[in-house]
Image (cartoon, rainbow, N blue to C red; front, side):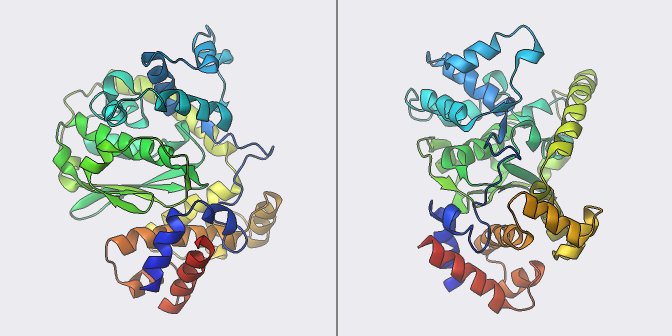
Length: 355
């Protein structure tokens, strides 16, 4: 089981995000074209954190200033990592045990806007999940949501494109695993939770505190019972849904156009893997309506390579599937390998670098 052991080490090791950039691109610089690391937008999560800091009596100066702006032009589009960390630090030192989980859980509709609560006017929970999974760019360009509907379950996976602080992983997973079920008042619909490559019970997740800034690249996942898709939404409002959609859709279209080539590649890899489509560079280039040589050139201009992005995705996806006890040979085939040996080698190399 060298692969599993190596995988868990690499996903949990802070240095891995830096060292793997040499061979696989884990933790590769996914900053914007101007060289900044402003991967978070002034969106639902940032606004919720700013509101929480004020409730705790420790408002952050920059958030207090921009939230008082009388014009939308006075709001920043992106948030620097420094300002985002300042929000976290002002909150973390004031929290009492369990307060963080409650904020993203049962208190979320009253105090914490998320991409899921923004979709809460939809007529069914199927539509809420489907719509919310498309809206990761309201929050950040540092990760991508992926929704998969299976025979007995429905899952939402969070694929980091860059290493995220552990408290950021926690925030995103709690929003989904603790906050979303409050809409149906049934926490038992959550079947399983994976937090950056590590299994968690709902009880453990609710008790987690946002104390760690350790950077992790592993994928997270929340799996629901498929029965959730059949439930009607008692809070549905057609007029409110139209209003929110008319505001959100143009913004999402604009942000999609602004994303880097690397972001688009990761998005295609996620979609192709889910559909059983080839993960090679030619197939991805075709999906992006470009030539292989053009794709290579654009990635190089961003300081990235296709092979590194593909390796990063493969380790993330293998991590999730190994936790489900999927057959290693089947995992290898679905990730584009002809044999188990190649996947084992990738995981072994990842484990060595993490060590």
